[in-house]
Image (cartoon, rainbow over all chains, first blue to last red; front, side):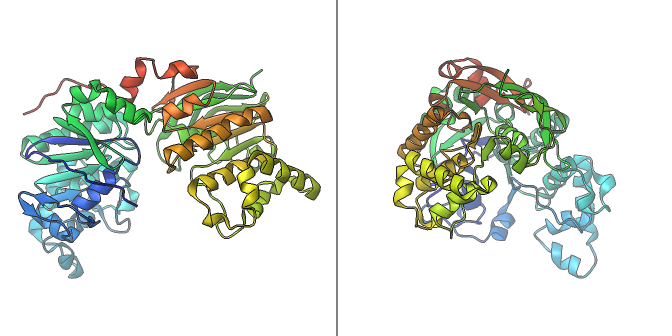
Length: 229
Length: 245
């Protein structure tokens, strides 16, 4: 079945772009296509002018695209720090096989854990983290490959308001440092507060796009959510 | 007295956060209801909690005035509350007839089962034509008919249906909603959860709007979507002044 069809959109460099739409609109599939997990039957994905259509996911990551998943994934038996290292695309897991972590990588990982405020948990097994801490670990680990574009699939899902504020601050701070964000999120308050521009998908296609204010005022968007479109 | 009362119910999964943060609503016999609300509002969780799949962390679920907290799903079913989950959960390699009979598992009595089965085939004539066919070979719409038919086997007081239109073509979904509308004549109280708020509300009397685990408001189904609060719930509001760059 076609989950996404003739879907075209652009994410501007330096923006925080929201990708929204009712359930089944094809948002996660669009993510999977961009990151090489799903190969499109037709069409192309260009990143920084490079045609990355059909690239293996790790190659897309190396070019500077990093993503999270809707359901938090972690390697529970490994420590928080080790989880960070496997997120590094360069020589990360090879150095783990050699049972030693490169100092340079460790420093970077620790710095990022400090950035999200869980550096004190670095040597704990990931399985011992709370849901919120796992969310922060995931957020820190997408930063390991030094991405240009970070794609977040429901960063606010299941997150309490205090943590949500922290995550939103992190996104704003990273964006200010030049990282572009593409965010799928169902919490509309977050989308409308965070994004410069919003793309609305429905039935696998782009329904409309615009500024948060324009999207909120657009009846066709509301209709899509209520099932009228 | 209300048939089903939900009072300040708090619920969630495993050790995770509260998905329902205190829901109160009341279901009267003979009225049909649709619960709408944005993604993550807790609609499905509410149905699962009423059905006994999740135990309320706080609050109370009452059926006919009796406290049902902690009742297992089979006990809720025996008490007259039937839950039709989102994933049709049919037995694909069993025939339509066998699937329906499984819905009457709690009945025990064979004669009674046969009577109920006849009743289901009367309500869903299309299923009678396909009773010997494996359920897995049916179309999505037909499979949904089987799950609805199966829910009738125990002669429930309340049928709670989670997203009956999910994955169905619009025309097929309309047929399903029409069937659900017919449950009223069978004396069954219907509680729907529907992503497609327009269609869901069209087929019932009363609407509940859920957001972030609690009830925002309720009212006659035909007035719900005209309420100005709907836009804010579905499309959000600005949280804080932006402080960027």
